[in-house]
Amino acid sequence: MKSNQAAASSEVNLSEFDGVRYLHLGTEWVQGSMRVAAPYDIDLEYVQRMMAWLLFVPPESVKGRHAMQLGLGAGAITKFCYKKLGMTCTAVEINPRVADVCRAWLRLPPEGERMRVVIADAGHEIQKDEWFSTVDALAVDLYDDDAAAPMLDSAEFYADCRRLLTEDGCMTVNLFGRSASFERSLAQIVEAFGARAVWAFKPTREGNAVVLAQRTPTRPKRDALAAKAEAIEARWQLPARKWLKVFKALER
Image (tube, one colour):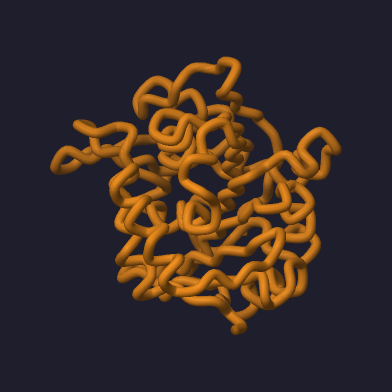
């Protein structure tokens, strides 16, 4: 696994194919993407699933909430939350070149009252008191250049993430990785949040396994989730009804 210092200075480059622009950190591994004709939509399936927290809040309450993304990547989550959902957005990214490329080539909105990019080590930044209990939707996608394993993946780290969340806030985590153990990572999240707070998707074809953890565990009925999914599709064109086929609580 690459050190934080090395990650902060990684090379950043782009490729483009069939109308999609891809972000890379000096390797062939895709760290994010943007469909050029629809720059504020979410292109990748696993990134769409990172928005599953929408199933647990009233749709009309989303605008004005606070979304935080740890690991900016191509900025898809931050852009969607800012442009489509009307949220206040904070992205924490260790590599300033990633933020520069996102602004220049991937349509990341400029800094402003609702948009902030913090250049920092995410593990350190989220320990600051200013963020505690302020985040409604926390997206964690922290990988090195080779996408080999999560760079932060301990129970202590996930406990820090939990402290960021509002009472009805959720964390979503991408657990893709060739050398990463899904079960080990899941156990760390359960230790920090409790088993009743954790939900998981089946892996995508590419191997991305998204896990969701709630600050306050709830067990909405399936028909209630189905109604929310329909509302999400109607409002924001995310494939939420498909999510329910491959998404379930860890513990009933």
